[in-house]
Image (cartoon, rainbow, N blue to C red):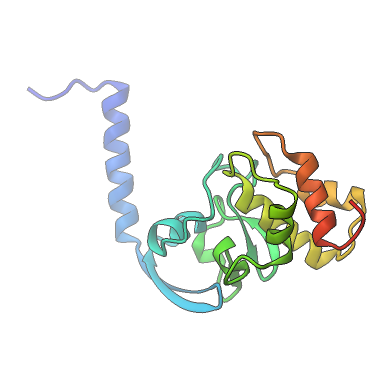
Length: 178
């Protein structure tokens, strides 16, 4: 006697069939990550976040919400801050991907140094996304106004509430008055 067809069992079967279909769709994809060319064999629909974390072991980029609303998964794509949790790896093409690991080889990027100077991190979970957004902001606006900082960091959520220190660190990194 088999399992009754309850919604739970039907859902499990649907996930198994979906997994089987996606495994059949695996394809080799070449990416430029942190200045290196890498090949991954993944379903082209796989979010870039999971390719970075699970296939390339670049775990500094965090999973937060899965819907591009919290900013924990922020990376740079050709220097622009983007959310990697909803970005299919197939859409990246030849664009340059930079993760928190690639921002600087030894943590000496001005934003990383300012983060330490201002003692920004509390729990630290959101910080790689915050730092990546701040670095992209400073690339676009080397001496940002308060309004530009607010706009550039909008959508990066810090559950610990270190927003004032984040703001101050961005000013320090920009070599402007905090």
